[in-house]
Image (cartoon, rainbow, N blue to C red; front, top):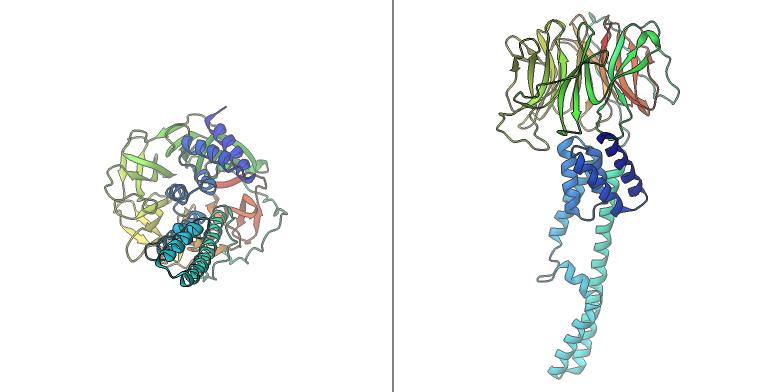
Length: 500
C-alpha cells in the first residue's frame, strides 16, 4: 500500500471514530495522520474537534491556518477560543482572593468544612445565637455562589460545544456579487443572463468542440485540492484520461500541446509543494528547481514563445516574517534551455496565479498586500522587459481576484472574483487587458465558479463549478452566453489549459 493510500485509510478510520463519539481513538488516529503528513489541513481541523483542552485546540487550529490562512471555519473557531480565554481571565478572581475553581469547591462538599470552621469560631466567641444566624447566612451565600459558578461552568461547556460545531459545520451558503457594469461597446461579447441555481440534472453537453482540456481531477479525500493530472478529449465526448496519478493542481499546457506543468505536492517525502513537468503521454515526469534557491514553488505557467515558465515561490534569502497570515510569495521565471532562474518581484506583497500573455511581454498576476493601509488583493500586469507593474483592479479588500487567463489574441483577460467575506461565491469575469476597461460578469451564480480557461480559438471559456454538489467542468459559449456541462461525476474536476 502506498503512503498516500495509507494516510487516506487512516483519515477514513479516524473520521468514523469521531462521528461515533470515540474521541480517544479518533485523536490517536488523527495524530498518526498529521505525524505522517503535517500539511493535511483537514486532519488538523478534525483533530481540533476531538482533543480535550483549549490549548490543544489552539495548536491544531494554528497549524490549519498556517496551511490555509483563509480557512473560515478555523478562523471562527480560533475567535471563539480567544473570546473564551479572555472571559476566563476576567472571571479568574470573582471575589478578591478567591478563584472560580475555589468557589466551585465551596459550592460542593467543601462548603460543609468551611461552615463548620466558622461555627466553631463563633462558639468560641460565646455568642451562640449570633453564631447560628451568621452560619445560616454564610451557608446561604456559599450555596448561592456555588449555584452561580455552576451556571458559569455550564456556559463554558456550551461554548466548548459551539467551538466543535464551528470546526465541523459546513460553510454557510454564499450570496451573489452585486451587479457590475458591462464592458464598453467595442467588446464583442454578449452580456449573459444570470444562470439559475442548478438542480441535480446536468446541463446539456457541448457539441462541436475540439482539442483537449488538461486539468486535475479525483476524489479529494484528504481535502488538500491536489488530485491526479487528467486530459479531457473533446472529440470523444469529453472522455477523461489520467496522465499522472500524483497529487497535483494548477495544470498548464505548453503552446505546442506536448507538455504539462503543474504544482506537485510531495506528501511522501518533503511534505511540500514544487513544480513538475510531464509529457502529455504521461512519460518523462521531471521535478523542476530541486536545487534552486526557492521554496514552495507553485502555480507555474508556460511562456508560449520561449521554453520557460513563470511561477511563484518563497526566496530562501527572504529575511522578513513568515507566519500563518504573512507568506510573501514572489514571482520567478525559469528557462529550461539556459537553466536560468530569474526573480521578477522583491517586495512585501504576496503574489499568486501568474500567467504569461500570448507574446510573453506581460504577466497577469494577483498581488496581495499583507500589511499597511491597502491590505487586500488586486489583479496586476507585470511588464517582462521593464518589470513595471500596472494595476488592473483597485478594489483592495472588497473583492478577491484569482486565476487570470489570457485570450489567445492577448486582448482580454478572464478571472474569478468573490467578495472578501463570502469565500465560496466566485463569479467569472472577462475584460479587455488594460486598466481603463470595465469588467463584464460572464458567469454569475450562487455557486462557486472558478478557474476560467479560454479555448484556443477564443470562442469558449471552460470553468469549474460546484453548482451540482461536486466540482464539474462547464463550458460557456461566448457568442450565445449558453453554459454547457462537460463533466458530471463524483470526482472534483478542474480545467487548467486548453490545447488544439
